[in-house]
Image 1 (cartoon, chains in turn cyan, yellow):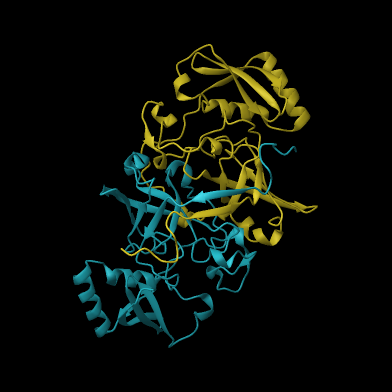
Image 2 (cartoon, chains in turn orange, red):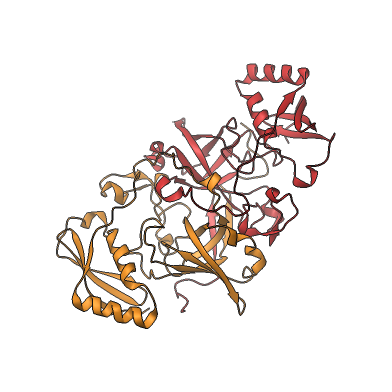
Length: 246
Length: 246
């Protein structure tokens, strides 16, 4: 076939940031591998100048969900890998990078479908309020599109090696940790207990640690480090530590 | 909130082409506004070096559908527009660019979910065969991801101002056009008649032309120019012309 003359093959394209994500996820460890699982993880998307004009999102409020296209900024300097060990396969099998949603892609482009709860504006700021996000705080956004159920929802599609959602595990708290959580919730208004239950319940451990017992883990949520351990098939939250943001 | 130090706001990102689309659509006019409508429009995605290695797509064959992320290369030099008149609203109402799938976006990024029919390789070429594509021939591709029904299919999502798929209109052929179509199908093996029925049936005319009658249109499909007219609520194919590819 003839190659269209208008375009050189192996072209490059410059993308600019249009917005930034603010979320409870301050580190990669603990972030659910798909959106919609951790419903307590609300996030915001702030549009940056010159994209912080209300007319750019006119009509978007009629959609319950949006696609957010973003950059895997924390891993992009590590480059891409031809094959990946998906967590769903227990980390034992290698799959091609294009058969996964891995962050280590030739172009570090991520996409998430997120619930659009509301849009607020004022003082020159335009903010989309999102539900059940799976995005790191500070994530640069490059595009927003409406979710069109008639075009995007294919419930009959075959899901390859990841056909089912994560099964949630039990999460328990020590008396000390529960008291700390309740004080934090009262002070900040954030649903911390539910957030911890959902983040730990989907088992954030990498596959190679799934069989280790008695190992202490720390997961960064908001300005906290949540200290926990896997004991008897459940996750025990031991205490909360104040994080020093770098 | 504090701005993460690792990232400058308003950053830019360089994306590289990983593949190229080959399709029957040689001009923007006539391309369906969503994939999945024109099932006769098969297309291929050829991965370009160094991405033409089989291990990069290992496991992808287990998925019935894939997301293809591409560049709106034909309109990207025209820049973006803050608001758009979506065809579904009859071209009368303006919506924010982020509330539409318009090609004139701040970053010219497109996404389509497409049926993955097969993957073939040989002589250093790696080709994905796709069904019901809505992509222009020569479209540069920047990413491929598996379609995950449990995460991506939200049949209950609310679809704003575009809740329903297109209603297909009747397409008829003059005797001359039908004879030309049959000869073309016999010579090339391409399902031209079905392709024309589906492409015209979803009414490719811009909204401002919906009420004009007796106007002759030309739609480029493969190496042909399909000449047609809208008469009595149906589309009449009058003849096929050989196109000279530029």
